[in-house]
Length: 415
Image (cartoon, rainbow, N blue to C red):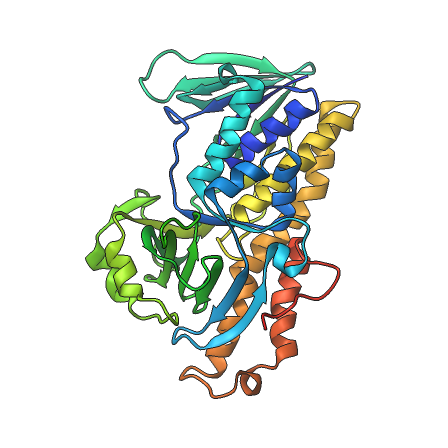
């Protein structure tokens, strides 16, 4: 069997490694000229790191990422709402990683090159269309860089892992329209900064309409560390505004972002200084898409953001793509026919990811901050009088159960 993969992102590359491990041939097609270390920070949860560890990537991840120890939820004013240990500190067998998205992708890419060969990755090739018959699928790729001749390739399966603007998804759902948007933009950046707290912790301050996120994404060196930050702010009414088509990862000025960043307080952190120190600030719309009724049509299916783009809440986007990869690889290795494998993959993963998409829209585990800020907008003297420990635990722990990364025993709070 041969599988064509459109998209050399985290999901597509991880799937390639897993299929190769199961003896299935892979060809990867990426629209960009080269696979580069782009983006800023992300978190990858233990259930996904377990899959990467099983691929032998844990040592490489340790060299470029941080094993997350603690997560603290705060109000905009910096008052603590909830804290908990994460990863192995919380009893998982593997860590949670805070890491630069590009460096995570590079770790997986390097493993693909080493194990499959660089000739299996075809860059500058964008999926343009495909046709199917009883024996296979024929995919057409255009030259996305120089506008040269198109190429045609045939295989038993086509996997569309080509992101939120997926050509494969658009083929099956041509009238879906633009991604769903609630009027929130994310300004993101990273800067070298003196180690904050223990160099392994993260903080989230504020709810869905206005939030500041902070965490390290590289090992500390000489007392400094690459510190990732995010500012989420609702700037428009989504009923009358759509996200501008050109603001997917566009650069913005410090003057545009700094006033919003200064609305937040994180104990022990000079937010204004960190933002001013950041060399490049990027803007992204906080967008997703409605869950689909199906991903699979014959020998073609969707994976990752092509299948279930979700709000970056609860550290789940890349994690869910990695879980997709494992499920699809297992199904293709075990099933008697590719169509049966793709059906089994969809049956398992579609309902699980649809629930994550829906839950992220109302804030995911960070909804605990919204609940507190709604009840005590001016702050509080006792958090337990605003929202009880059990109620806060139910919100945070309920999300972990739903998203598949909870432990059998209850999460331990930080002493």
